[in-house]
Amino acid sequence: MAIDLFDIKVRTVKLHLTNNDIIREINKRGIKCSQSEYSLAIHGALSTPKALDIINAADEILKEKETEEKKLKNG
Image (cartoon, rainbow, N blue to C red; front, side):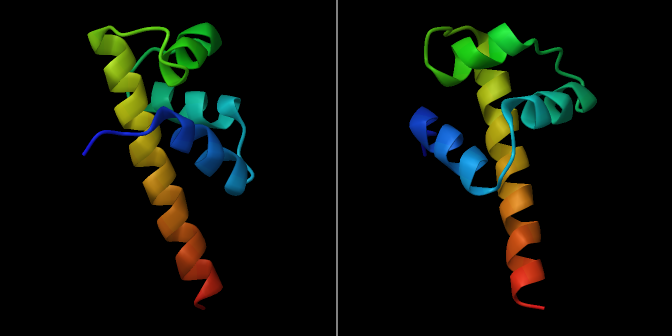
């Protein structure tokens, strides 16, 4: 399934996270990512293998955060 780049931005806001929060997590996972690389990747302006890694990592991080939030809401 393709990742909707707009969806990454919306999900980030819904979780009350910032782009910097996501970038820090991406860097912790071993993918060197600057603010400009992240912005270009999630806006679809950068279409390199690294950009795809950034998008996939952001999606994975958001899924983890969404799962955490659901667990907190459900007790």
